[in-house]
Structures are given as structure tokens and as C-alpha cells.
Image (cartoon, rainbow, N blue to C red):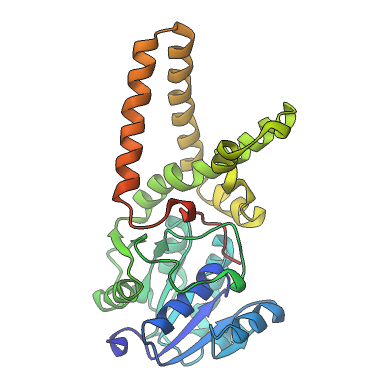
Length: 300
């Protein structure tokens, strides 16, 4: 089946996600060459030693030469820049995809700058963790997690099919939606939670409460350890949707505040019970351990 996906794969950005893709496809029987592209020689050295890649280079042109599948696993702004560069470097028949946490700007860049934009497939595998770099990569990172594919009217069915089969091999739950719908939804379930975690740490610090912080604080604030450069890119690239999500959250929070102020025990308890049940249903429906739940952090 791999011949229907790729014979040679280039992974641009061998970090947590890029390295995990490499390990995952190796575990699933991919026998072709995997080329890793990264800025830092140390990063390439770790990936080579771990068996994630066969060849490592810091030169993008060298790194994508001869590959029929190119996966961009760098931060959002870097992906956009690299798409422009790939217009002159990549084989026009190669399928190009990405793992970026936002989609509208990336897909627009691909359709405007690539020689053959129909061979680009926007993708966002919803997996990650606080640790970054290839040393944190693992073959089962994606198992049971959702991946969003964002084809447009420009996307060729053959290219979409190859990327779909890639993530089927990695045992991901495949969803399709437009880039804009993706950005609206991910702002509320990924980007907003990170903003809330950061705000919570800030509040605990400025109020002098960190000395009392324990497991509950740790569970909620875990995402605040995400890489600052990556999250700056994400927040600014998806700014309108993140701001909208924050506004909606403030409305929800004010509703809880009103119930507390009212002293209405029955209404408050009913709301808490309803949402606890909703969260429990979500957790039980997931095939993965929520301790490893989605974070877009590990992209370098």
C-alpha cells in the first residue's frame, strides 16, 4: 500500500510531530527513504541516531529533491515561507502537506505560490505534548487522535487520497472541513485553552498563590509550558478567531459568576452537573489517554 502513498518522504522540521511521523510510518512498514530537514545540526543528529530519518540536511532544496511526498512540520509562519520557496524547489508532481495549527493562511499561500497547488493538502494532526524536539518523538503519538484535512476546490483527489492514506496508516481519525471552519473550531478547543492556561499562571503568580498550587492547577495550566515562539505565531495567525473565542468564553464565565453571585444553589448545581456529564461523555469516547491530550506545542 505504501506505493500508493510515497516512495520517498521529506519531513521539513524534525521535531516532536515530524519525528513521530517518521517513526510511525517506519513502524507501519514504510521502506523508502526518509529525508529530514532542520536548521540545527544537533536536531538532525538526534533524529539520525534515533532512526527517524535516513538522511539529514539543513538545505531545503536538497532535502526535498526526489521526494514524492513532502511534509511541512515547522511553525505556522515558517510553513508559509517554505511554501513560497517550494514553488521553485519541489517536483511539481510531489504531494505537499503540512501539520500547521492554523489552516486558512497556509492553504491560501499554497494556492497562490505553488506551481501545482492542486497537489497541496492542508492537514492538522491533533496531537502533541509539552516536550519538543526529535528526542520526544514516538511512533504511537497519533494513534486514535483526530486529524483534520482541509481540501479546497483546487485540491486533486489523488493528492487528497495519498494524504488520507498516510494518516490512516498512522491510525488517526480523519475529519474533513474547510480551512476557515477548521480555524474557528480549533480556536475554541486548542488555542483558547492555551490562552487560558497562560492567564491562569499569570493570575496565580501576581496574586502570590503559586505556593498553594497543586494537582488541579497543574492539570489546567499544563499547556502554558508550550513553546513561546510557536504560540505567538499561532495566536497572531488566527487572531480574529482566538479573540472571538476569548469573548465567547468571557460570556460563559460571566454566566457562572452570575449564578455564584445569585446564591442559587439549585441552578448552579444543575449547570455543573450538566457540564460534568458532557465532559465525561467526551472523555469516554476518546481512544487515547487524556494525560497526553492535544497540544500544538512541539513543532520545532
